[in-house]
Length: 279
Image (cartoon, rainbow, N blue to C red; front, side):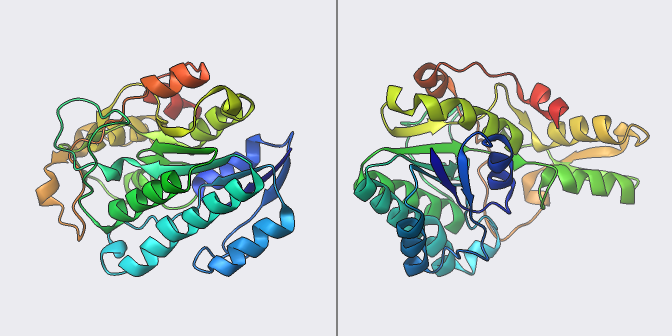
């Protein structure tokens, strides 16, 4: 089986390449194929003629997206739409990743796949447009929404907390935004299990996150306890989101419910704390 994976310099793409070694993996990074260039995407797929396309590549800078809407939509909506069209043309499955930011965070409790979407900013809107385009195209398209992605590579909350705990004596972290921390290792491990079962489940949207949820503040404490035990945990202070101004609004609640994906692909998940220990 020949699998084409985009964005392999990124967190999820890098992790996928690491676990899918039994397949013929075509690893494509931004230098090899920039998702801004739709002609390049089409040429790449036509040249390799894969049996499966996996697209973890995305424009992910939530704040910068507010000033670069056209670029965000090009990468997060137009590019996956083209990939979905090519996948349908070749009659092959297409795996795409989306985000909790398609929701506005006003719901009490967890979000299911069928809940009303209402993104608060350009990033979420561009990812939602990608979902809608893919579903309009149809075919064997599987969209996996995930949240709070972290890993040992790149810039993310995990690496930021590790750095701050080394550089500062005290850290302030938002405590009124809740979600599900999801490691790239967890995502890759589940996709590895899902690939052989793709034909057993109907295409559509699935929430791919571990069990449980927490605030950024709680997540930060867990990270620092495990990575820098000499840091005084009492010097991590909770603050409100409004005390940490940012260009883009973020959902206060982005807990994704993962029941559907577990049933569809016969999976069992651990909680986010267990997944953090693995990192």
